[in-house]
Each structure stands twice: as C-alpha cells, then as structure tokens.
Image (cartoon, rainbow, N blue to C red; front, side, top):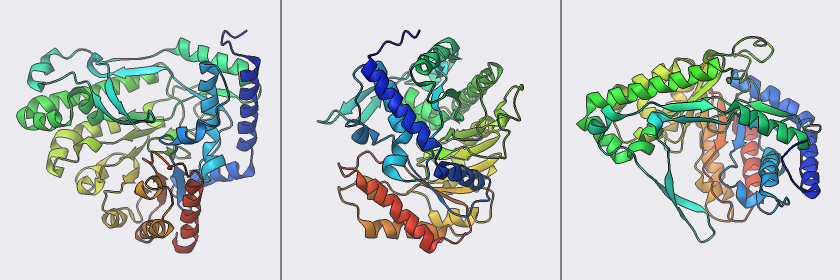
Length: 422
C-alpha cells in the first residue's frame, strides 16, 4: 500500500484526469501527429510543425481547473492537466502522451556551487525578475580554488515516486521514467556563477584562465553524461520526449527502445541540446576563440543536436554553429536575420526552427490578427525550401483572454495552407 496519503476525493479526481489523458492519447489525430513529427525531424515532412510552449503562462489556465486539496495530489494533478493543455486549449501539433512521465531526480552542480536567486514579484505574486547570488567575483583568484563538480541521480527516490503515482493511477495510465535529451548550456552556468558583466570582462582580463575555466566546464559536462551512461539513466529519445526549446524528439535516425533492448544506451544514441544566449555581446571572433571549442567538445557526444534559443545565430553561423557535429535543428529567434538563415538552411539537413516574436500573443488582451498574419507570412515566404518548425515561446500572460491562443494557432494553420510551398 502506498504511503502517498490522500483523500478518496483527490484520488478520484486524479483517476478521472488519467482516464481522460489516456483517451486523448488514443485518438487517431495523435497517431497521425506522431508520424508527422517523425517525418518532419527526419527531413521528409511536407508541412511546418507548430508548437506553443505553455509553461510560462499555464498557471493562468490551470489555476481555475485545480480541484485537489492536498499539495501532493496537486503535484500529480498539475502534471496531468499540463499533459492535456495543448490539446484542450491550444490546438497545436503537440501530442498527448499515453503515459504519465517521471524524470530522474538528478543534479549537476558545477564546482559544487548551488545556484540560488532572489526574485521580485508583482502584485499578483508572479515573478517578474530575479538576481542570482554569485559565487565568483574575480576569476583569476577563484580558478585555483574551484572545487569538484557534484552530480548524481537519486534512483531510489525516483523509483519510489514512480511506485506512489502508479498506485494511484497506474492501472489507468502507465507511469514511465522518461529521458528527454542531453542538455548542456555552459555559458548560462557561467552567468549564474559570476554574472554577465564579470563573464565578459574575464575574457579580456583573464583570457588564458577563462579558456581553462570553460574547458573544465566542458569536461565536467562530459563526465556527467558518461556517468548517466554508466548508470543506465540515458534512455532512447526517438518518440514523445521533449527536445529543448519546445520541440519533440520523434526520429528514425536514432536507435529506438527495441533496437537498444539489452544494450547500454550511450550519448551517441540520443538527442542533445545546447545554446549560448549569454554571449550575444561578444564578437564572432571572440565566440570562436573563447566559447565554441568547448561547446563543440560537448556536442561531439550527441547523436543529433538541436541548437539555440533567443540568441541571433546568424552572426556566428558560418564560422561556428554550422560546424557543430550532427546538427539537426537551429533556433531562428526574433533577433535573428531570417533571410540570411533561410538562405543558409535551404536544401540543407538542418531544420529552420523559427521562434516568432512573443509580443503578438503575449502583449495586449486582444489579438492583432493583421499583425500576426504579416509576421508569420514573412517567415513562410522566406523559409520556402527549408524544413520549417514554428515554436512560440516566452509568452508570460494571455491577459485573461484564453481563447486567443487557439485563434493564434488557427491563423498560422490558415497561412501555412495559403503560403507554404514544401
């Protein structure tokens, strides 16, 4: 019997949600989308895929749907509601899973540092800004004193939580441990440790030390990934696992669970993700000297790679990013030169992963449909001949107008029908 105590009312609510999720997962539409995502990721798709990342505004929708009373039950309830949110509210190409996902309870603390921050909140209690508590003030002084990186996985806690959730809903909705992708963002770690300004000055004040610093970070990521490999924690990423920046992992270009049965899954068998938003303030030459060698060192381990977030990759595309091994997707952010990147990716084996400006959906209560059409049409026209994926991110509120997100997706679909030429 589970020690995951909760009322019969809470249990009944969770079981109903689990039933609804499983029923959604069995819809023919979900099976169709699975095929479409696999073809898209393997460069055989005939249309752009659309995904709206709801994480940043889902509280606006979920808060009125929560019914459970205990906090433990609400954790599961939130996950179940999240699993169905895109289908019920958004109408994009996201797929409702046929299971309840649980991820390894793991940690990765560079040089043993705990990342902590102080948040500022608005009148509604929403976080509107934060400041990290830095550990390094002077790289020259700190480098010789840096400790060992601390990483690991608490398998016992992971399995215990899995068993607890299974006891509640497992007979309705399978509970699975999933592994999304190998995620590495070295410069974000640097900024969390020392701040943006300090990072930029350190490249100038301590160029040799900064390279040693970055190389240690790369080596520690590699050690962590190899640890996950040896512990059997890396799992296949060929289905409905999350690939950084809102994408999905469906592919036949990597070995699936059946092909890897009885074998150790290695880093080369799975998707990886990297970005470096924090280095937009340095020149392409500096990026090539101080950042890229260490990113490439980590990227060498991946089976396939998705790269980029908000940084404008066009400035470092030819000299650096295009040279990353097994690169399969690249982020085309609102600050990117769309036309240049379309020319570079047209006919290539790299997906044009477009991130439209969040202003159209996230600013103002009413949707400016004319402006949306102009913005998306430009992308569809520029990206002809590319394999296009559209992911909307960084929307922090719908201003209470929940239906506008579905209308936003409907407009994109209409424009694809009108303007897209595969």
